Length: 399
Image (tube, rainbow, N blue to C red):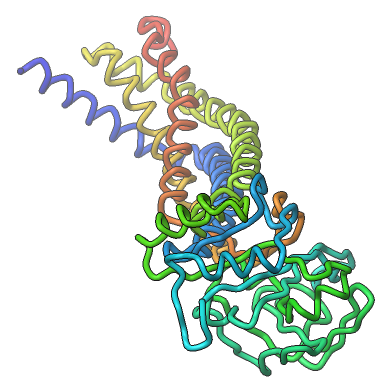
């Protein structure tokens, strides 16, 4: 026990002496801190992109909502449903009934081009033709400017995020899609879900414009309860008149987010690893400088009976402290500069833009701090071992 206490006492003494000399090496220390802060900022910012996209997609889902498409379809783009299919789905067991009948909406999905406000380029935007029960099926959708489109007219409403990201979507403007002109009559808020990135219009008007006949692509059905999904799915899968894919809306949008979040995360981690190599070399250089400046001091301590272990710990403590400071600065910069920042990215399943906000969550900042400490540990390890192996006699000759 006494040996352990003595060893810890040496660690504390040497570490305190080491940390007190940091101001004498301020230049190299700042370089290491800035390098690690830059890596953490990029690391957290890129991963917050994936987190923001994932949050937007997953917040769209509701456990008592079902998404129904043609069998084998993994997105609305490749699904086709007839009017009879929509009727059968709407009348299936488990579908909630409202004042206007079953709460199910047969919908059509097309891609249109709109210019981005931030650049001169155009982007693919989802235009959704919805049924008369669309607002009952999605009670979170509220008109926040103008009014809802009227049935049978070439009118559309724009999601809040789409209105902020794409030019020409102001209420009162006219847009030309397909072979028709569309009057923008309102802006809606869907609570930060994917629908906020879409344009909505009457499905019956959209069908002839894009030569879709009387077909739809998807049915969104509000169920009596989350537990009614099994009865709803069983009723449709056992019906020989239809051949369908039935998913909970939460599962559908979770799958939609996987490809892009995996891609962004992979790229982000790759960039952070490459930048981290440079930051580690910067930390190594800083700590070698620290060891060189403290050669005489370390040799004196060793001559007085201090062991090599406390010397190693003291060098690593300085390296980890600098890394932690860099990590905190980097996390703060990422949060201040990117949290809530709105942008758009391509959803590769639908080939359309989805507007979302970067989400710098505490878990990402914690990951950035852990990465910073790993870089500090790697950067201080070799200099720490060198310090512990300094020839005491040779070093004392320099006194």
